[in-house]
Image 1 (cartoon, one colour):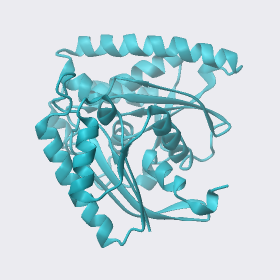
Image 2 (cartoon, helix red, strand yellow; image 1 turned 180 degrees about the vertical axis):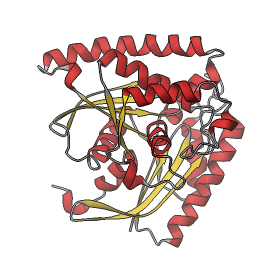
Image 3 (cartoon, one colour; image 1 turned 90 degrees about the horizontal axis):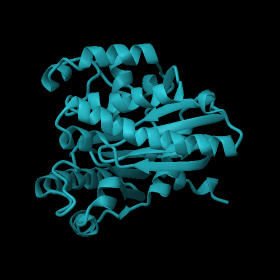
Image 4 (spheres, one colour; image 1 turned 90 degrees about the vertical axis):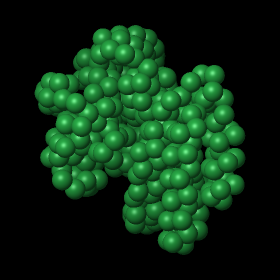
Length: 307
């Protein structure tokens, strides 16, 4: 039995499963919203409260791995750990308390694993795709051609940072527009050099913002990753969700079928990133993938696929 743990800036997730004939067979999936990036500052890094929440969740996941007699574990920390002055120190604390082999991975390795996981869930696999992974502290973009990641970029724009760091909707909108304008300029140059039409790229989204929007649109009372994978969210539906969610309080948003607990104050910022990107790319739909970095990590442990 294999296990993958992704310590993101908002959510800590565990996937226990097997790889059979190159396909992921999930046995257990757990997610805990720890808001690791909550209270983050450049000077102090990760806050004490955020670390306490996250360490408790790590201890729970470690015990779950023992119960399932997991033989191999890949546990990674991403943007919040990379950006924090006390990130390495917290990793050592978690390792000592849980015996989990947690490591901080680079943005490039994060992008590669995420893309591999996402593409394993999409049918048919698009020949030319831009994958977007909206996290708590950063957002990752990966350009994939013929199932290969050929370009990736991480920007320090995540839903926790946006929600906590900007006082008004207008300030958040301006920050998103500034970052994505620069990103699209760079992506346009890359696409031109590769003779790829930017406007023809299939836009694929993963992580909590996208999967929650899919669950909301499906009005799920019980989350089902099978229904989320490959679900298409047209631009018009996303715009309708923006109009519906924006006037509501976080508490009122969280009573909607499909809304994940703890995401009520974050979903609007994530949706704003998506809509701004679609407008700049000229995209009319977003394909959702429940699979992502966890599944990519699991696939990377598949000995039968190693050269």
